Length: 168
Image 1: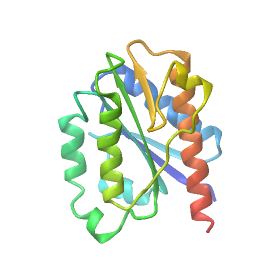
Image 2: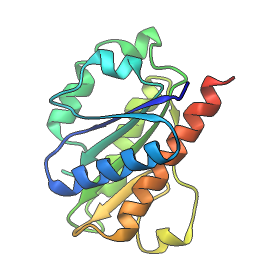
Image 3: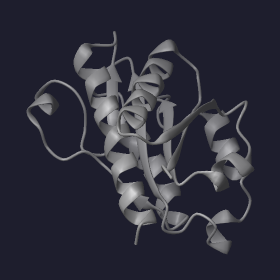
């Protein structure tokens, strides 16, 4: 039975939605099941049912207030261990190269670590000379083919890690 990955994102711009769709494509190409949802549609049950989480937020000097609120509304999942051991990854988009993209990724990763999740990043590759971060997938300004490829790679990598973790 294939693993299931929840791709959850706060849609404040079209670039973040494009990255979410590309990441979901990578999950599917790896043979896993994917659920793609905006934070306005997702529930705690969606989060608990998934074998892994791919979390996205546009960069607004960090994560958006609405994503922060959604994460806060998940109650004490961090304390009761419901998400502990599940793999998770992050993606973001922004208008400028030095506008805080890594800070946005790190804020999402901080929540993941607080929940005991296994954080999955991207290993160094030539693509990162132009696009991306090892913390997660990124896009700056107009979406490029490298941005989309990086998001697909992150989705596939997360699905692969989830498969390995569920088989142990």
